[in-house]
Image (cartoon, rainbow over all chains, first blue to last red; front, top):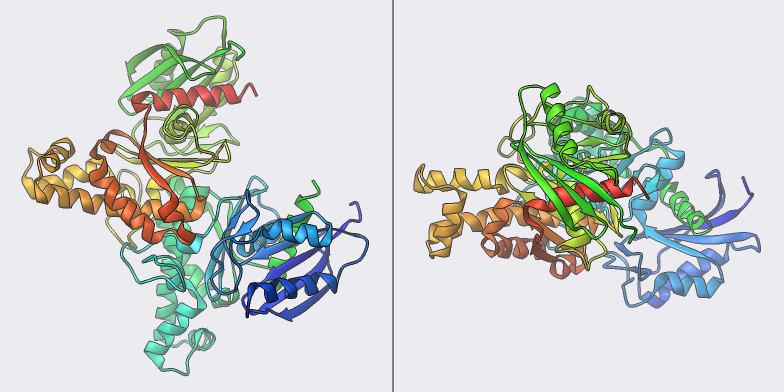
Length: 298
Length: 298
């Protein structure tokens, strides 16, 4: 190892996580700050501060995980749903000029997938796909060791033709996202148990053996399995990693997902592929952003 | 151009197309033979004959497009549905030893996509996905000039959760394939117009302004659009190319597909992406197989 260190920044809708990371994925120091959402100018100033708090003369590069599809050719974020960041600025060039360092940018869920591939649940695999189930449903893939640089917006695959409307600014129908997130689980839980029951409580109820709670999670898991089945037939991954807060539902959703994947996968792939929980927790995006920074030095 | 020539072989369920192709994609000579389907031994003997009929001392490599997912690491075909070819033999090594030449293998639909990318409808694009609508629904993708080496079995994405059973040996439900092929169109046409009407006649009826025919094709196109919408959000391609015999339905299916894609695509991508018909016709698979052969020489 060359001793180089980079700063990885995970920009979320509510907070900015930034940290210094070495080539082994070790997080040396990190900071958490609220995300300024009043304007793009404020948001950029908040990102600048997050970097400045950690910067020293030995930082070799910066990496940013952004909650948006990325246009790698132009270095821009596109249609960030929850924060004031848009394609009017060349984000990568702006950061590179500001700090005089090489800058890599990547979608936040792609970054998390990259981190799980190198240092987390998929560290023994050659190829993997990841889905993060949180407020939204993000996706990422690594094939033969390389981060897949398409959009990998797996939460926006159609799994229910003419199904329920998608979330936020997305005009789609029947996308995976509104069927499998914590938000989706909370909605279904509240329809069944009343307004006090959210996704966390739903999982606890299932833990206690409440059959309606188990049945709701089973339905979510089966929809998740339809999405994973599509991904198996597209990517043929060794491993599917499920992260994000709602991954806490564990086998209540993963077992039914496995059943559907076994049915949908071609050539026995649905039975071979392993579906496991992520290991790096909330620092996956930050560590992945650091890996993207290291890639600029290769 | 270096003057090198290769043999490309497109193995189909009913015929073997083989030809000599140069670096510019020009097809110099080609042969068409029926596919022997009585046993794997006979099939391999048929492929050997197809190559031998064209072979000369200046052939630099061989490429095969196979109707099956491919395991590139092991050089094997997996679960070919319509022909007696399976993963028990290392197809690539067997052909390479037999002819003493470098051999590339690829899925047939991936090969067709590669050909359309280099010499057909997508020759001006940097990234594209292709769907071939024939008996089945095949898929392929090229990203930043490189052939996507996942399975790309886009016909086996789930687009209708718990929908109709898939075809052949596939145990899936609600996959794109049984909604968008010529076979699917024939089934719908016969239910509406009786047993004499197949997909070709259905398209002619639509041409003549028959409203029920137009409506059936519209429904097929909308399902196709759901699949393309998923692919746009995964790959963010500049161009989507539709090939195979049933692409003859043209704008009767492509216009409703475009409408759905505009709705499903993130960040305006569904409106930006162009959806066009393939240009290379039945020789796309053969020319793509030749490109895969050239890749072994790179």
